[in-house]
Length: 237
Ligand SMILES: [Zn+2]
Ligand SMILES: [Zn+2]
Image (cartoon, rainbow, N blue to C red):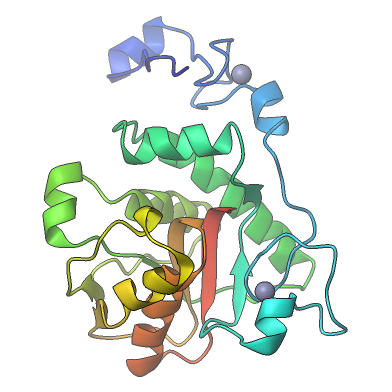
């Protein structure tokens, strides 16, 4: 389903038109998706402000049932897209298909939503972006950290610095996707260590599934001095 990127170099970009990564139709210069495909991405309009879970049902505080009972260690989450087709395909293409250029199209979704929320006064801008780190072994195998790629584009778009080096994954963990909810929490407990922390960071991840990973990073950042923690992801499962 992916169209190979014609523009592997500056010269190719001048000679070949941009093609949409989803439908292969013409895309605006420098964009990975055409306007139609981008407009059709499944967006989450109403969600729990604390964990970004799409929900029409909320208590008076606007929180989902789960956050009202047991809030996570982060305070505010933003995930503009639903983890449905074609967002799932795009994220898998970025993560496992080495299609790093897709990071920009996905990061743009976060940047647009964050800017909207900040302008409407519903979100305070974070003071730094902290991508969820990969264990060095996994980083070596994959060649890049998809969360860091996304963070760099978001940071550039909204003018917030990226602090990629302050948190490390100190324990090699199993892939979260293979585990149950409860096992996910145990799997990432104590997996992260942060040497320093901005006061109001936004943790950047590709997708929030149960929230266990970002919650563990939030705990490590809070331990290093962060006071208000955002989580920004492309999608929420
Ligand atoms: Zn398209
Ligand atoms: Zn919630």
